[in-house]
Image 1: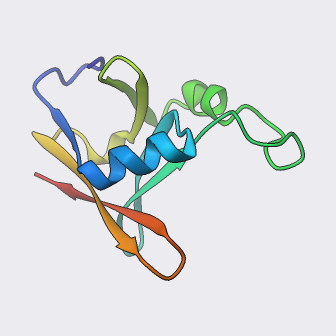
Image 2: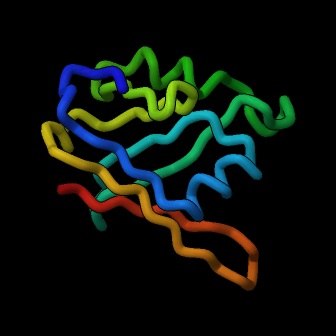
Length: 108
């Protein structure tokens, strides 16, 4: 895990891991919203008309996010306003109607 807060731990729920593999997600964005902490997955493997810009490179340039690497393969961009913290847990709620996993975070 990279980042200036070496003691922080990032934990992904098993449902989230499987969903990320199925959807070929290669990065997570964790940020604060008016309703709480948000987690969104992004990738660079979509159709060109859907993904016009390299979203991962876009977040790498933003100074308001800290980059961590989870399991040496998944980039995790965390909004600096949420740091420092000891642990961020990324949980998933499965919706059987549309077969999607909705991600949400817990900060400790």
